[in-house]
Length: 540
Image (cartoon, rainbow, N blue to C red; front, side, top):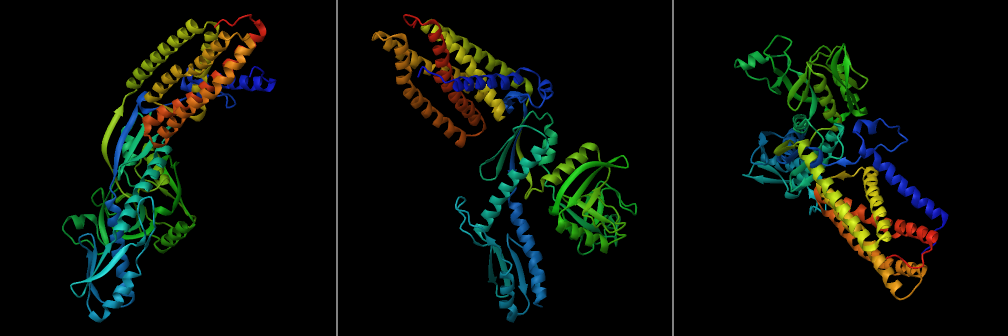
């Protein structure tokens, strides 16, 4: 226990130097740290929402929309299915969370049922969510000649679950595109998402980005009528609808309106990339399709040269250019009366993907940085008071042995901060509480060892023998006590929420570093002192 091989001494020294090196960037400004060479440690500890301020949003996923979309898709699928088999029908549409259709000829009822049942989609089983699987629709006959199609309970639950998971992933992508560090994005309840973005000083932009579904489609403009005629009382052509826009129609019609065909030429879900750029000194969005989308886009533009087509984002026309020539390369440009910020946000939304359902903001809080500064100042004071009190206690209780323990305590604090910087863990106010608690607990191991050495001295053992026996008999107890606490920290991290995780991270790291400094570093210093001074009696 009192012999250290040279390689062990070198390893301990290297770890201590690394702790200092990775902690130092936290004592300079962020700009200075970022300006350091890449080969030097330059990462700083990430501060949580409660320390540096930022935005807190509680979102609700309107998952009922995905159920409505499935019913609408069924309507669009039933129509060609029946027409393809020349089955006469009428009154096809949605009614009371179901799709209904009346079959004209009773003798075609069985054939109609068979064709509609082919539209069923398997529901993936999920043991965790309690979903057993099966088909997603139930087809039944009501009132003799009417077919009613409803979604099964399993299908509704699966679609809601999938919508929540997809929404969390897309929200994460959109926030990551903003360049923020360590956002907290987690599910809360059945249909809610908690979003906390530390350091984001523009919450309105965050709400704007998260509040858009970002479903983009390419549709033809209906040139057979104008928005002015429809607004004047004319009938909207079948298969078309009136949508708002920020542009004017080519015929000088009212602003913010376009008559657009409902049929989708190309869907935005085939986009693989988009970026903000400039064309003719104007900010535009450049986009690129995958191979499937590129073929569809090329075919659509080749068949409709000379016709205007609308780029529709969340049922709003953002641009309506005229197709001058076939676009066969799978790339294109979205231009309009955009600002640079709008172009950046639009390209961000398209890259991140469309939300499966709209998000509704239930709760919004903006935490100012002043609160964080106060918390950091209070945390520093608490750490300093705890630090000084423990150091004084150790020196008064154990003399020079206590002084060595204090040196190890200082090193322990540097190792904690260095580890937080390396791991890029988020330091929250509960995390500071974990550091303060670790400072108090860090000397426990030294106290156990020193008390055991005192007992060995009382039995008349020599300084070397007392030191050897003290460490041998105390190490097992030290490991047992700290392992149980570390297990509790792991459980808190796995099952806890954001603030509790922050506490568990600093507590867990503190346990590891405190055991290292107490069992290894303090012992190494005592061994060097003992071999150098060779005291007749231990001053403990």
